Length: 117
Image 1 (cartoon, rainbow, N blue to C red):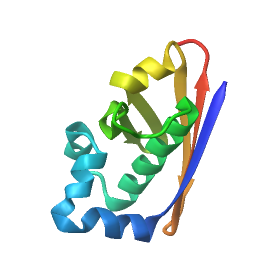
Image 2: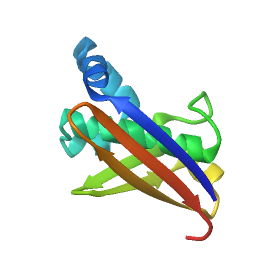
Image 3: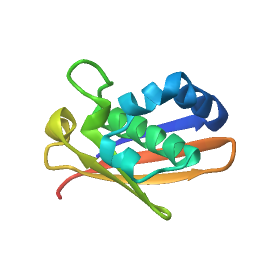
């Protein structure tokens, strides 16, 4: 079992993803994630969740692991990660569970890699 956690200062994150015509949004999030029209606070949770997952995988984002290899889906209070590419390779047969909480100021996520599917 492996874990990862992350906290995001929402206002700082929102400033970053709204600069430069949103180019950072396209780099961090898949077209499918953006097609769901998430609000800025959901984007902060999604970003934090991706960071938590990559920490649980024991690596960082580099040339072999893309932000797009981890897709985050939020449905109410349910947050799920769908892995592909290098992230899926690193996870192997492990299942990823995510817990998220936050308020206007911060988004906090926790990822747990458990054995089995």
